[in-house]
Image (tube, rainbow, N blue to C red; front, top):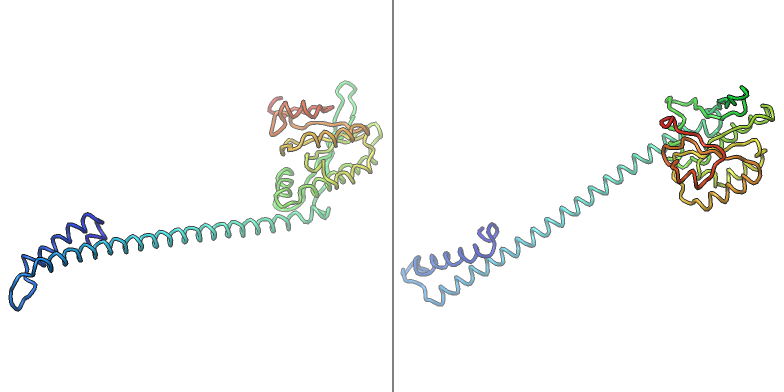
Length: 264
């Protein structure tokens, strides 16, 4: 008990005390009442010490096993927690994908067109295409687009909105341009490239949104240079918010700068 509680020094002290009790103080031979020989007494003291040390070693081994078991249980608990989180994320992804399905199929998304007015001439010079979603629950468009990116449908959703919005070019006067939002990642996708080849780019203004960070400016500038060479104009949306920093504006060198409302 001393070994388990107080370790080696206490074990030695208790062993010596036990040796004294088993030696000179308490006779070994109860029938004769005689004291044990010195060698027997010393051997018992040594035996007690060794037994105490063995108890310490066993205690250490038991504690190590207990610690290893606790570590294993902790790791197992963490794995279970990760599995639960993964299950929750998978369930959330499944639910979001199901909610977004009508929009992806084109039945849950509609487009509104905000006029862009030339204040000097008092005429409408352009229209901005804005996506709206008729799917439950009611949420702002940027939330639905964020959900689409979360489940891996971001480019598909943006290209679909661009297709719906830019299709209005055939229904407005040729003097009116159409402006549409696009993220840098979608702008460099193959789906966007296939869509944009069908359009009269001299009547298109692409607004690069500020909600995502540009990871590869050289590639983005290369794509934009080709499009701008074919007549397209570039706008940077909500300058001063999100990732639309001054460096971002200077790097893209847009035709149109749209200030964030906070700056206004």
